[in-house]
Amino acid sequence: MNVKLRVWRQRNANSHGTFETYEAHDINPNMSFLEMLDVVNDDLTKRGEDPIAFDHDCREGICGMCSCVINGEPHGPEYKVATCQTYMRSFEDGETITVEPFRAKAFPLIKDLVVDRTAFDRIMSAGGFISTVTGSAPDGNAIPVPKQDSDLAMDAAACIGCGACVAACKNASAMLFVAAKVSHLNILPQGKPEKDKRALAMVEQMDKEGFGACTVTGSCEAVCPKAIRLSFISKLNRDYFSAMLKS
Ligand code: SF4
Ligand code: FES
Image (cartoon, rainbow, N blue to C red; front, side, top):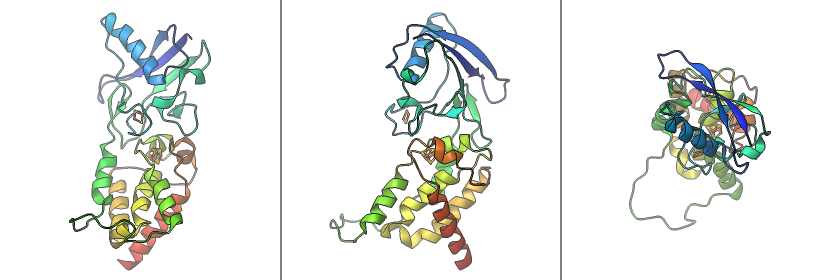
């Protein structure tokens, strides 16, 4: 395949960014989108030019590091797929593909396609954990958990913290991420003692970081590579208001 790329290039947060055009020739359709960028970067490096900075780590759809917007969609055209698992066969031969960073005030740009998503880490530090007395491992099944609760908690725990939900939202809201992270602990018995404290602290930190409010447009759910459902936002709202009333 041959494709033309329009890539956002920006030296740092304070400099002016612009789209630059690159040609990618003889691309194997079975390459991932990131492997195609590797080929383009090899070429740029050989020519003595600055390679395109982009985030990645596992390249298996599990770490949440890959993060660009492809043709206007966070993680590109495929449903329930992260950028690293998007393959070139999803595009047309000869297509012009536009690649941009996630754009949100709470995700300041570092360089080119790389943004700083440590706001998510600070939300996790505010309450995304359980405090428990450590000791020997408890016996398996010592705490009975209904199957439907464990399934629901696992669905929420699938969130990889990529931030695509924020990038897709016109308000740059982080509600889907926070809802998943609060819910996967609040649903289980081990998470219940700190349920109220967790919901209040994580929502408060989300607001402090400058994420917008949720107006339930559903764009977050549409782009989420792990299919986190909007219903988790309803659950977070219930947990939050109940905690607020108690406090
Ligand atoms: S909810 Fe989905 S889109 Fe948002 S951070 Fe988690 S995995 Fe990414
Ligand atoms: S590089 Fe890890 S999810 Fe894409």
